Image (cartoon, rainbow, N blue to C red; front, side, top):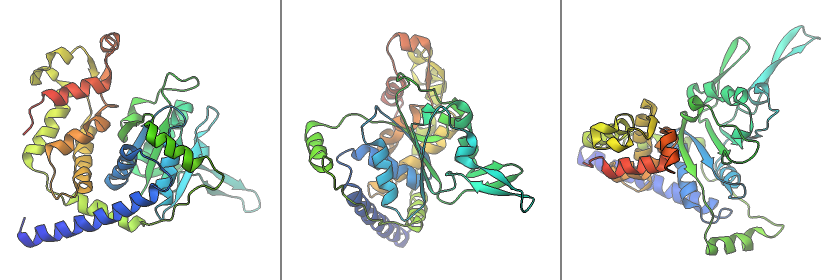
Length: 330
């Protein structure tokens, strides 16, 4: 990279950092704390990947996603997933017009830029599978026609923990299409007090749009141009391979704890998310720490643990953390 090119990239990164700071300020009018969740939603938006947010009801999951959407000049739809939802309610259907003797397409809420799939695990697999083509190929097929979805297109899904009554586990094929899976916890006492002061009144704060879809595309272009050293690439591949062949990385004790390791999609998403993490940190290059920072969110839903691991009260997060603690860092 030449000096001139490096200077240009630095200027571009600073410009994007200013836009992100402005966006965070606008979001902070409504959302107290939850900086981790907000940063990851923005990361998914810039990296062009879908995001799954898990947590008990009342933790501002839906509010955070709606607020991010409101702060961007873009299309937004929300659909509440319920056990009686049909695929046509999501993607749309062809309606016959007897007066014209033809069919006309009635588009569903999926034809938007940001789709909030609220409580996605409350709908049966048939509806969840209707999202598969849209999430992977950015298109939907209705009848004989395949129609492209708007660009950008992002699914922001929330789910309650599986232990809650009336929920269905998501199919593995669909879970793998989410770039990130977040686990959201309770706010601390200071944040909770501020939430009470701000939200326990009739007049709620208003959010103004401060970014356009073109701004998002520009951020994606800058993130793509960040430098990813071959040693960091090897580190990413080693981490993913350690989920499949732990014995090769001095992790033989995990062999019986993992039923299935992460797919190649995990490798792609780790690299993309690490680049965005570097961009959000104001750097023009990716470090191993960037990979470690985003790693748990990229891998936790792709590593399927065994019954033996569950018997020992181990979670996928525990397994992923052990991998990051053991695999050699360049």
